[in-house]
Image (cartoon, rainbow, N blue to C red; front, top):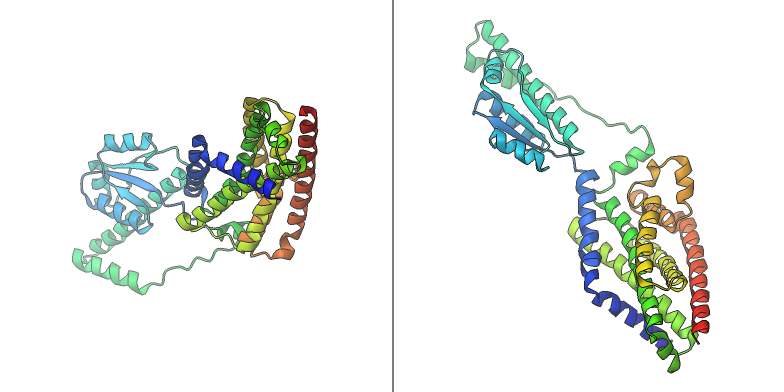
Length: 387
């Protein structure tokens, strides 16, 4: 057992010493979690609007209305606003010219130049701008109506302010049409991205270790290890444990870092760790099998990345499984990612317990046993040929 643990520790150290892994292990997963959370997560709706033009009552009122809706408003020049929009740093650019300001003061229809960006949020933000302009026009029309009946300007403004305080604001009650909408509404901004990237990078990290196994066999390291006080069984166990340790390290780091940096809620932590443990074991078996079926490190690396990305996409790491068509959803059930995705969804979103995720854990355990057995058999077979 000591020999097996020594091999496992060596594999983990080699993985961490590889400088190319520093970015892909420690930085890249968190960047993807951040990007997915900012684009699609709950709370990602706050937009960025530039309101350009001279300081008029229309411009000031529009800025105030948008800021009340938690939209970030800036006032660069029009050319600067268009440049920022082209670089994706704005969602909408609005120009308030003199004609629009004059029409607003007179209570007439207002025409503004609005340019919408290409971000996923831009259309929603543009609608927020339209709503704000309509609200300003309605308020201005009420004030002009009072002034037309002989009410002084200051008294008209005071009367409208008093009426606004006395009138109860309408209450909005959101009724979810299905459980899925309600479920995702309660999900944290970065929760989906964190669980998806965990599954993606744990599997990729383990599969990347298949290249080191091929290199060790090609350079005769495996043969020299077997020439010492180590049996083939201990070597096989060490290789499996080594890749398992890589998967657990990668997954544990993502869980810890995402919790600290982004406040990701992993639900029942022991259950989440159990899902990670079994999924990492599945990935470990797949890595051993891949490392013994191929004899070229480059081919193993390329196939490992391609296979990892395809399985992750099918398994819900890039798009929620609930949005998949029925046929694709059935195909996704062939991947370990889908079963781990469902387990994390049950734990994070629905507060599931061990009984709720037991079927998922059972399938992951069966996949782990199958792949580890095949990988161990294939590794023993390759070692026998080498000897």
